[in-house]
Structures are given as structure tokens and as C-alpha cells.
Length: 629
Image (cartoon, one colour):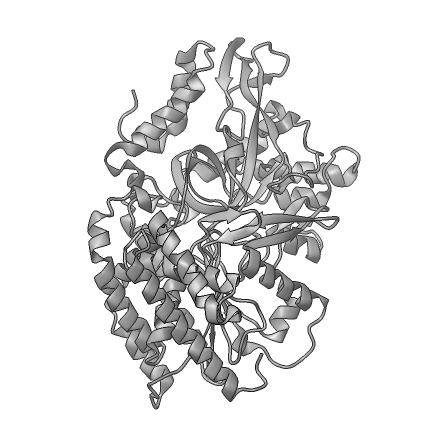
């Protein structure tokens, strides 16, 4: 059997070995997956696997085992490939049956396409990007836990180039999906937006194409502007229906960066330009679907773990799987420290700090029909427009959560930014938008940047999309002829001068008790005063509190109902069903923030007091600003 590092450095050797032992038994494929799953479980072995997120691509050995922490940005059409094929060696006139799984290029001798041993298999391709808006502290922490040591790998390139040019025509070394019959299939009705076809891995964009084509072919389609990191074509061989668009994954797979992929792509593009009827794909589709392997590597999935969160400080992908007994004991004390910190950040406003904590741990835990339960969009009004206060506030939140994005709601951004993903039928791909975010991302909407002016049609669509995201936790992707609804779970915080023009679950008007002479220096000093170890405690606290299960006993439910009737007795208008719902959400989050997974009478009373203070402040502000809604 392979030695400790053979399965990382040469996983295809393991695959071929198990295939050779199989004697055509179909069980060998399951054995391959189980082999790697078991290896990755032993003694933190997964930390020895190099990560595409941390290591430059040219440092990674081709055909080695790597991992990639990512979000599924697009899902392409299924593709066919040669799972098993037979080769002829012209010199010795011998034949050999080979495995084509987890590979892009056939190897060995001349492929016998008429062999009875040939097995055509099917796989799916996902276009994956780094998790949008992932915080720098999270990236550094993930990189710090990785024990893989790599050195630049360069020796393979010249040999591979030579082979691909000399043997490509002779051997017909095509990617395995050469006979794909589904290449022209459109997928506008696919529920997960399967928009791209199988040729993803084979066609490199031509550098002499027109400017517009060149721009689109080199576009890595990241949802957020300014994002860095590799995009990856992930080849999925089983259970692909268990994955959804926008899922966060950690993929373990075999890295494929063969230059022959780009050579084949160039030839196919030239061929299609000479004879457009030869292929069913457009030139635009070829260019977009098959970027150079050096730019967008291929990753043949052996195993993938769905990430419930991307907080590297928690051991498991699911916080509820961690031993939380120690963490729960500390939640109350960490909460008090975090409350003090956020009170300083909010210039002495402890009420706003309370609500900010509730917002940061909120989470859509269920849906009742179309209603998302658990969301808690917070509008912090009273933020100064002239100072960089909101920018500093966002930096504080960015230091606390694993993923976030600040959207400045300037008139220019509203009228020009593409927020909703749309289907490009010419290139057959899903063009990303700002609102294509992974679950639990913190979206910071800075409304203080909005100036007077006219919203055009794009601006109105963007405002509508933001409103739908806040109210229903969904984004309607644009498929030209129809819209497709994608549920999401995104924490939205709105900062504004007056009340936001967007809906929110709760509005808190800032009431600073501090007036530092230099706001920037004050906020910087507050941030610097937090030691990294303290920030890590806050980060763990927020993720753990968000993941706790919550229940309400029958006794408390009855007490709440009686209280509701009592509150409406004198003035039925004083407490609506909507007010009760918000109060229950606040009570739930308040309990969880103290590490309590059930509502107590004391917790209910505290929630009522907190809401009473907030409503009182809001009404006072309305009296001051008589024209404010």
C-alpha cells in the first residue's frame, strides 16, 4: 500500500492501483473515495494537504492532492468522459486497459475508441471561487493551521508542453469529455443555475480576440470587486445533486494544470472560427468555459466537506459538533467584554451595542412558507455623514466576522453596480453579482454615502433587490426570460443618517455619550487596544452563539401569550402581531447571546425592557425630526 505521503504527492497512483486490483468490479470507485476519506481523518492529516487558497499555483505539484476552500459560483451542464479506455502500443503491439477517472488527458499509447472495454461515464463541473468577502484574519488563521510545506514545481512544464504539441494529434489526447453529447444543452430551467457546458476545461481564451471578448475571457467572475485568489473548475463524480449554488465547500481533489488543455482549446477555437457549424458551442462560450489551466486550474474532487461556517477558530465545520461545554461557560463573560468594546466603538451608546450583538449572532434557522425565521436586519441611524465613522465601524465588524462586504450606497454605485447575478446565454454562464454571497456573510450597507439625485432603472432594480434580500432573505437571479429565486442567509446592517429608505427588522438611533475631539484617532485607539487573543474570543463567541439550538417551553409560551393579551388590553394598537414577532426574535437572540438555549421568564422581561428603551428613543427622535417617517 502507499506510504504516508504517496497519497498526497501521487494520488493517481492510489487510484490506478485500486483500479488494477478491481478486476472490473464497480466497487473500486467507492474504495478510492473511502481510502482518501479515511486518510484525511487520521491525526489532522488534512492539515498536511496544500491549499489552493494559501499556496501559489506554480508551487503545487501537478496531479497531487490539494484542497480548496470555496463557494460554488456556477454549475455547468453534465459532461461525459472515458471512465475506462484501452490503449495500443504500436511498438510492442500490446493493449492495456486504463482508468480515465480523475484525469483530463488520456495517457499511454494510441487510444482504441472501438474497444469493447471502453466505459463512458458522466461527471459534473462546478465553477468555484474563494469565499466572497472572507476576512483577512480568517485567511491568515486558516493558512497558519496548514502544515503543508511546498517548494516551486517547475520541472514538469517544458516536458508537458513538448508532449502536448508532439503527441496531441497523433494520440488524440483530448479531455475525457471529448464525446460529450450534452454540450449544446441549455439549462435555463435548472434550479441550481447549471449554465455552462462540459468544455470548461479544454479551451483557453485567445489573446488576439477582440477587446470585449478578451475582457470577458479573462474575467474570473468573482462576485465582489477587488477579490483575489484562484478560481477553480471542480470536477464532481458522485452525489453532485447534494451540492447547491453558493454552497461553501472545502474540496479535496487531484490538481490538473496540464498545458495540453490550453493547446487543445486553441485548436478547437481555431477550428470553430473556420467552420462555425463544426461545434455546438459559440466562440464566446468556448473562451469563457475553458480558461487557461494556469489561470483556472482543474480540481478532480475526491471528497468535499460542506462548510456551515468559515470560522477557522472552531475545529469542526459544524459548531454544534464541537465540545461547547467550556465555551458555554465563558459566553456570559465574553459577552460582557464584547459589549464594553462595542459600546466604546459606538461612542458610549450601550443600547446600540446590545442590538449590534443581537444582530451579529442572528441567523435564519428555518423558513415558514416564504417567511425566513431568525433574521434580524439592524438599521443604525444617526450616523454622521461628514466623518469616516461608518468606514471605521465596518472595519470593527470585519475584524469580528469571517466574511463581510461594505456596500457604499452612492448614487453612482446604485446606478452602475451589478448586484443581481444574471444568465449570459451567449457565453452560457451565470455572470456573478454583488449579492451572490455565501451564507452568514455580513453585508454592511452604508446609506450615509447616498446623495441627492435620480435613480435610473438599474438603480431601482438594485434597491428592489436589496429590499427583497432584507425582507425575504432571497435574491431573484435574472435569467432574461424569467427570474429564479435563490434563498440566502445574509446578515444585513444598514447605517444611515435618518431612518433608512430600506426595510429593517429593528431601528436604533445612535445616541453618543462621548464626543472625542478626533474621531478617527479615538476609533483607531479603541481597535488597537484589543489584543489578538481577545478578538479571537469575540470571534468564537459570535460563531458559537449563532449555532446554538433554541427552544421555548410550553410554560413560557403560555406566559408570553398571556402577557401579549395583557399588553393589548388597555390599548390594542400598542402591540401588534408584528411587534410580538420582533419581541420574540429579540428574546431569542438575547437568550442565545448569554449562552442560554431556552427562553426564561427573566429573559422575556429583559427583552421587553430592551425593546421599550429602543422604542422610546425612536419616538423621541421622531419628535425631534418631525418630518422623519
